[in-house]
Amino acid sequence: MIMTPALRRHSCYKIMIALAMVDIMVIPINAILSGVFLLLGISYCNCPTLVYVVGCAALALWTGACALCSILALNRCTDLLCNNFHKKIFNGSKIYLWLLFVFLYMAYFFFFTNPLLFSALYSAWFFDPFVGISDQPDVGFDNMPHLVNNITAVVILVVLDSTLFLRIIRKIPIAKERVGHIRTQVTLQVALIGTLAIVAAVIYIIMQYISTPYSVIVVGQLAWQAGHGAASFVYFGMNNSIRRAIKRVFWDIIPPKNRAVVATVSRHT
Image 1 (cartoon, helix red, strand yellow):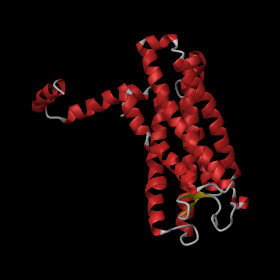
Image 2: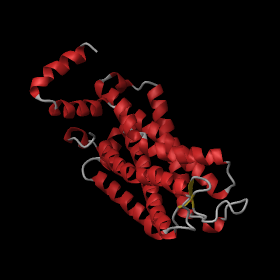
Image 3: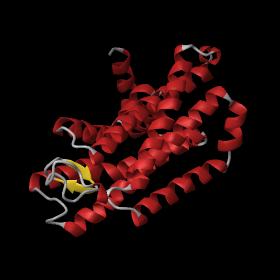
Image 4: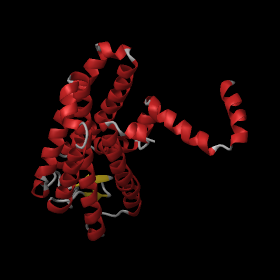
């Protein structure tokens, strides 16, 4: 629904579309394949090629999502706090330069860094293929660019999301207008999605370097899954523009002779 022309002309929705594409590609990995690997007891040692390739994709998509969430938060902050600066860096074709950067960033992690490897023992992804054999993870397999990515994403999202929340709580003057209400809605959505990314990023940093309780690892894995899977529910639940677009699509599907019945039922429910 966010690909409708009316929404697509806004730079924030272009970023949301890119983020949605990443979500669609990563959910089969971090949710479905992770579940299959867990049920079958698959780890790097007994299926190295498959786990390696899937891990490369998982890492690239995760870092791409971090970059997109950070850019989206920056987009909302500049739109609310300094609209002229926002237009200079996001309007027109400039948004595509941001998206090109994200694509190259993902390609770097896919081809040039150590991949994440699934551990059936912990139901999550680690850089150490022998995790669980010793008391502490082997940092010799760590991925420093991934560490930098997660720390940077956490810092950016905490700062920008906190700024967004404070701005909303203070009830900015433009929030009384319709345009301001729409901006506030989109900003809240961005902050909620960013919060899930922060939780996943922090836990995934900790568990790569420190012996972490299984329950905390599971929370990190679920936060990673929710960060990608919850976006559609957040958009649908909090974004009036997307809800209206969905209604229009389904309204066009309903045969004309049945529309009066649907409208009557809607008024009485």
